[in-house]
Length: 452
Image (cartoon, rainbow, N blue to C red; front, side):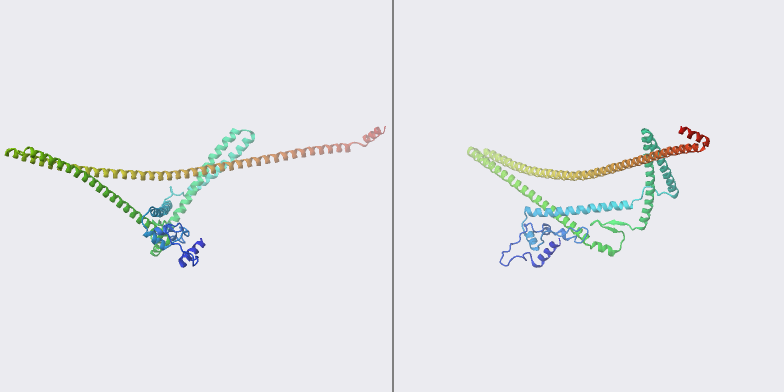
């Protein structure tokens, strides 16, 4: 990163072609080259907004060149240029979404901090009563554990299991009492801390925590900070470009509708004029034929011919009016059809947007479900680990008991051996004492018998 920053600094001071030879041909800059930053050409590079802040994106790996930016702005509209703008808007949307999630989390955190604890804190008498109940439960648990051990050693497995279940229930009651005591303690400390601490709020632009009613100097420092200014600039650019884009799309739609209306009016007018010319020619021919036939008639016939001509003229006028009305109706129908088509297109677009929103919601729900599943799995794993630990502890206890029993047996055996030895010693002493009690006359008799 430091090397890239140094290279960019040298490019700004000495130019991009600082390492080229004097005789080497310099390549003209082209905004379509991949080495140039797309975001900088469109508006600005987001990497330059949050330097040395918590939201620092690091140094941009692309080249920022004002000359290339001018070429990009002067270039005609094309698909690639629109794609660059779309990428910039997508990146801005992603960053704004991240900061919006941060703001939401900050507000939730403040709500939790400002929320009151459930129920009032416990009094001194209640805490003493709780402690006494905990002591009684611990004594009962220890006695039940001893009884279960004795029943297990005697071979009453069912009785031992029942005692252990009862012991587990008492342990749960004990844990609930301890939790109540801890919650009351934490609620008291939270109330004291809330009374001492100042109220906070979340900045709606950058998501930083601010003190309500803080000094104006600190508020001005926050508003002029890099992070706040960067997110404000990002939001402003995104909104302006989105508005310009919507206006451009609306202008295109309006032009298309006007062109369609012109084409339809041109088509409708051309057909109507051809039909009217044909009708006029046919009427003129009929008039000439009638004149040839009625040229030799009397004055009354002439009057009748004039009446006929008047009737024909009236009929032609009526036909013209009917044709004009028919054209107006066709034009109105075309307009209604265009309106219906535009409505259908708007409906289809709204449906597509709703589908996209539903997909996003489903994705968010799936993510939440996965998180909940992971939490449940972690809880199950923790429970299994606790059970394994309890089993290991029980095994260790059983081993210790077996060792103690073996030691007791060894001690009993040693005692029995000592007793037997003491008995043997007593017997030997009795024998010697009897020998010592005998009279000298008996001793002489035994000696004489032994001699003979």
